[in-house]
Length: 271
Image 1 (cartoon, one colour):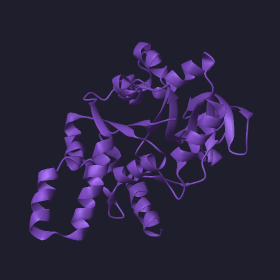
Image 2 (tube, one colour; image 1 turned 180 degrees about the vertical axis):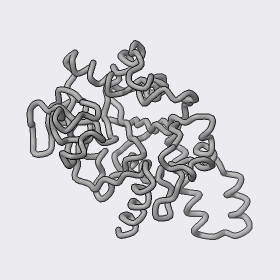
Image 3 (cartoon, rainbow, N blue to C red; image 1 turned 90 degrees about the vertical axis):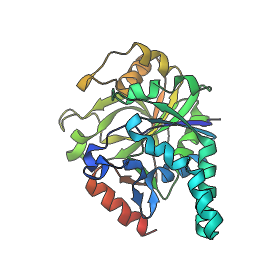
């Protein structure tokens, strides 16, 4: 069973400036609830027992959010407000799950993943990118089912407009194994329309093998001088590791841009 998840949170959030100049984007409220709580709820519902947050010193407010016990206790003693008591109990539930590691120099998602190596115990683990919110269906839970059935790594996939493939990592598909699942040959980062191997895009949910840490430890920086997780995945595929692209059935929301963040509030408000 997959019991551990990692969530990279050290990014600077430049696409949500000026809000993120003083505030961690993952704590920004989406319909009255911090975005990170939607991700944690997805993990809990999927059976995850431990979550590793990768933060930076500049984003310590994320840790502080889960460690404000004295603040809550002081208010509860005075007010005994049922809503505040319920919120505090929820925070305590989350806190039991979470460990923290630091990525103070932004060297890419691959480097963020590598920071969690000492905590990962099992053969496979879940990674969730918080900019990608998936509602109405638990994507992680469904991917874990696919993993159990095929004993392989799994990545979330979404069909996109062929005219927009240059904005995404695009799967090179191999063999279709079910209605929603394909073995893949790899991922092409932001291809031209002409060179795109498919119109299936990578979305921020991954079930990765622990062996990826060995690849990341030797990996050289790629585009932009960063360590890219997709480069390590490509290496594993070449060496025979099976990866499945899973077309999830929930609704995708992009919380990483200003327009996407506004739209996410509207969409969740409809539920």
